[in-house]
Image 1 (cartoon, rainbow, N blue to C red):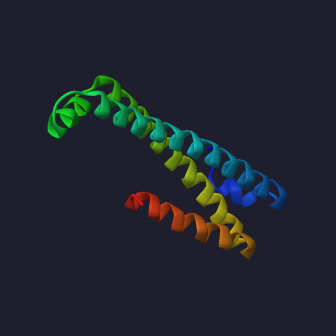
Image 2: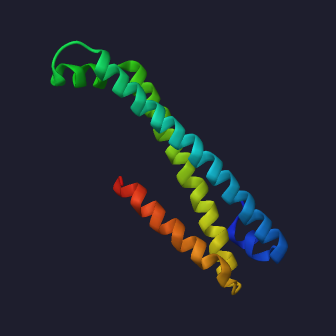
Length: 123
């Protein structure tokens, strides 16, 4: 979504809420895809660790230099960047809605903020 803040502010309430719902839907879909990819990467790392000969250090080094793991890690970082950009769109639409005096989304935004902080901290 590449709608400017001015264009969002000029939208009717119905259009604005529709844009918000659509942006949230896209965010949730991309977050699910990113989390699924993250879990697959962790599973692949664990599988490689268990299947590799040698001690812990040698196993970890083999995983760290694996091209497949590196490629999947890069894909995961790109997915995270796209997810962050979509979250910005959702937040901008939420700001416009709140500036119009709609307090109903404040609780949902607070929940997202708490969840986002926990993700960034790695919990």
